Length: 441
Image (cartoon, rainbow, N blue to C red; front, side, top):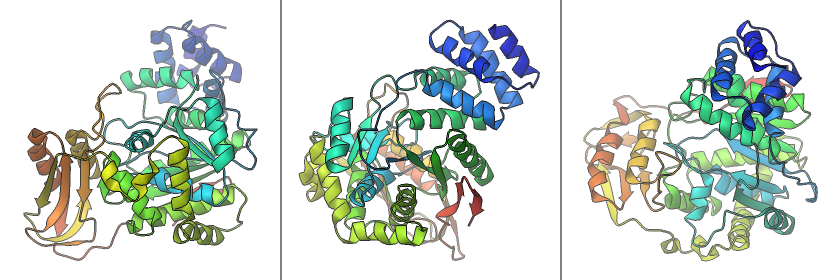
């Protein structure tokens, strides 16, 4: 088998065999196939596309490039959750303990933030002592004991994806549905859960800005699951404004805790209850979304979900006292309110700009090597549909570098688009995709 022939075949729009895809991925991962040849294959895939069977085979070739987590020693149906990312997206901090409290084992591997999107691991590391680098034994033991563990990726999981994504990033081949879907799903499949809930974000603060493209990506990922007999549900949710009000690591931890106390933002609460209901369906705890929502709400109202978060923090060596004492979290030196120089109703928020503003405060990373300020970020006070009066506070900046405050302020002010006419709040959930088909709300 020659890489030259595989490239030529895909260049000409001919379907690749499973063996050809496996040969290419394996050869590139172990260094036998050079960058220039795999780049040519990526561009051919980008231009010619892949069918569903090819996409499944590409996904599984990447899964098989490294280790796979074995969760078989954990009783019950293990349900994972993945978000395609956005601004203020702290759903895992609420959802994982909520679902674990309801009896679903959650063995979750999460990532760090990069660019204007945040990462769950950074948020958890703002809790004093919280250990996100668990070895496999401790990770499994935690799930067996308290039904939950959240950690950074362990072992040699999906090395092909890391190498291929880095090449896609510099060869203008990122934005292809098959390549995106196989990248996401390879990591989720290798993590070992029995079923997966996908939260596919769409809007001006999401990777998939177009709603139809978000549905197409969701469909592609659900089809990958179908191709390997793994149960997948994808929910398409809004990212045309930040989720909740807090953007930044310790600030988002506080908001997540408040949500588990029953006093969090309505959009974050509603989304977590809906996602939780679908996870309960995947875990065979309920047979309807309505029943799932009732159980999810009860986990918050009864305090069980908050107690589960406390157990998670303690299990991973964090200081669980943060739940009732936010002063234990990292604190920013400068806290600056931003006042509106406009009035009217919030018609639109440039969410990506808000994410970049948070990045400027130090709350995010420009590169994977960048240092991160766990205390920095932004809290919004006004969102789409809200009435704003002149000189009213619309946001608060948290920073440790005074020089960054003015730039952050101007970026936030320029992110708000106003109208004199009352505006409806954004729709939170646009639809779902399951193996049975697509449903748009």
